[in-house]
Amino acid sequence: MCAALIFNAKSPMNQNAEAILDATAFAGICKALGHPARIRIIEHLKAIDRCICGEIVQILPLAQSTVSQHLKVLKAAGLVKGEVEGPRTCYCLDREILDRFKRTAGSI
Amino acid sequence: MCAALIFNAKSPMNQNAEAILDATAFAGICKALGHPARIRIIEHLKAIDRCICGEIVQILPLAQSTVSQHLKVLKAAGLVKGEVEGPRTCYCLDREILDRFKRTAGSI
DNA sequence: ATCGTATATCGTCGTTTTACGATAAATGTG
DNA sequence: CACATTTATCGTAAAACGACGATATACGAT
Image 1 (cartoon, each protein chain N blue to C red):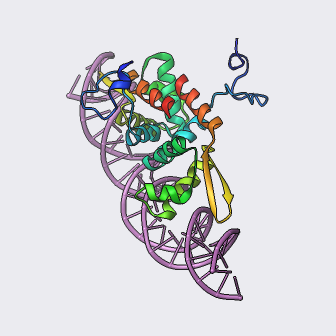
Image 2: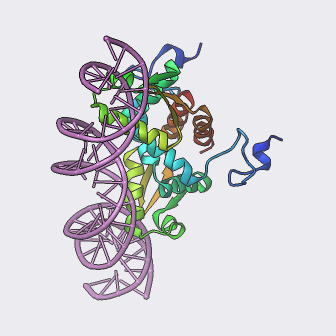
Image 3: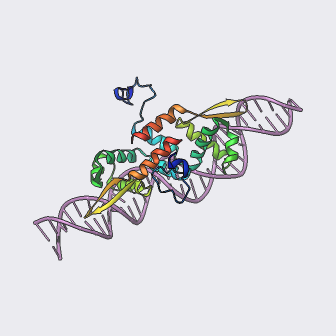
């Protein structure tokens, strides 16, 4: 039927959107999402699409350095992307990874 | 339309199946799922419906006490239920909680 | 060139996680 | 009753996490 039924997630040629994460990769994403502050960051990024770090600092009751660390975790997991814009960094969701997480979660 | 649009997750009267988890609850479930061994336990339980602890010990390359700890984490998160049957304990998924997790993940 | 702003990184501290072996508790079996 | 089986719990050690303040870095503005 669809590509997801033909290729599995471990196939190197599988760059399609239907890809499903294996247990380790899925656990890695879950771990990155396993903190309330990081969930709120994801929710906020979903709502406003893109924003700078400072905006998140104002929303969360955490120090700037702590927020920066949480963003680092999310970035390492591939859930968010950050691009430097002059003195600030603009963050946005990586919808591709997020969708892959959702599909995998749905398949459990 | 459906109940999910009328009641939100924080409503005390919201015991319906469409309930969505708040950020903290969702993060808690994600944290519990944030380890490859625990994902494999969930997958195995989904495949065979119910099994005793010893069966999981044979599947995973971990000591019995470690597996028992992982099961404890999953149970604390509400993802699995365990009932004592004589000298052994039989585990199975809590589909309700799992579905709630899935729906919340899908709504992110 | 200096200043102010925004962010990342460093160092630190206390807590939590993960893993294991050893042991206790519960329950069938001989 | 003694014994084997199954699982949970305890104790422990190493690693990772989460939070913070202090500091470094990068860049625009004056």
